[in-house]
Length: 200
Length: 200
DNA sequence: TGCTACATGTAACACGTTACATGATTGT
DNA sequence: ACAATCATGTAACGTGTTACATGTAGCA
Image (cartoon, rainbow over all chains, first blue to last red; front, side, top):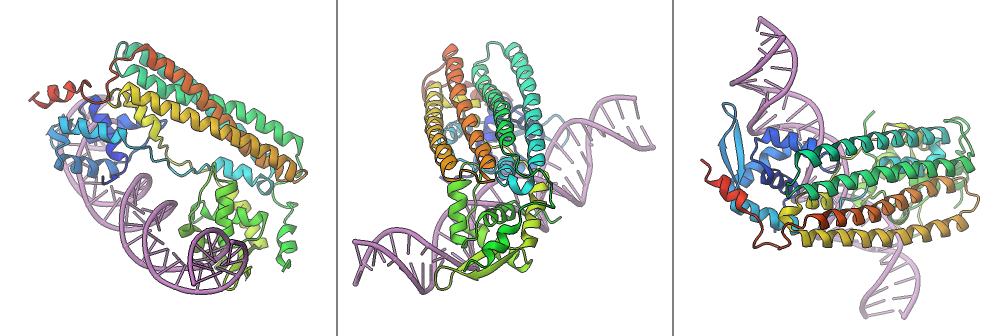
């Protein structure tokens, strides 16, 4: 019930693959889920304590003095299944790049082109990373029942990045058609405000 | 400096196109920027008051008694340019669908397929909406200096949705290859936990 | 010896949503 | 008269990040 935020899901999910310390869990989330998920220590530690109290994970001696390895329990696995079955809570969209492009007239066409090219370069970089990752995983985890599921998430990243590449080219063409004012600040059409200001 | 959240940017941006009441501003953000941005009243009202105190917007009499129309000032336009020029603060990724797919073995292949098909249906729906929107806007705003910029954001939405459609097909094929356990809950391979559970 | 990586945890803060409280105007 | 929509605002809450405080273990 208590819609405890999806941190619980990510934490239980991580431990469902492999018992770990909180620290390692964070690294795993960063490295493996990094392209579609993130958690900070400030979330992970309290969540693990709560899960321990609920009996969903158990604390064992860790690799170092004072460290703990967390192991998921049966009730934890059941809880994970429950959480995964909940409807997806879509995060409200907030795309800073598109916000800037939308008000591109004010920002200036030059800056917009720069932003677009940066986005494309980023996408191309990720594309290479996804390919490497997919190749490495397909070898390492050959035969793992998790592999096909993991590959779908990598595929998502790749298609998304490909989409960005194609989009940037189209967007640049659109801006080519109407490069009204290329200037950074000075001769920007600010007159709107003064015109509308007295409209009533 | 004061990285005042990008709400300020969206609010000034909205007013830069057209003076509005706070209420109308929220509707405009929902309807026009909806596919890549969102703001709630709880953000908009305090932000407008702050912007007024800083002289970036001015309050005029609104269309109703007790309502105010906000008009951007020259300093507001300058501030908007400044905000748009700031580096993009990327929101930490949180994709609930991919999280579920990654732990798809626990969720079950059937549910994963359902989620994928839902995602595809959503994408197809948006695709149609983007096309309508682009056609409508190209007519209505013909010649507007904002039009090409707005079209780039619609293009982004379209490419993103197309990417989802292509991805879902690929993902379904990946899951086809290794449909280890199709069962929802019962005979799921939970033995991991019991194995680890007594391992000490 | 001292740096780096491993490891745990908390407190302060920023951000944003939801729900609530209130009321005017328009249309039926 | 009443419902729907326009309109404003706040308070409580949840959630998540950052910075800080603390300490161990391995290695150069």
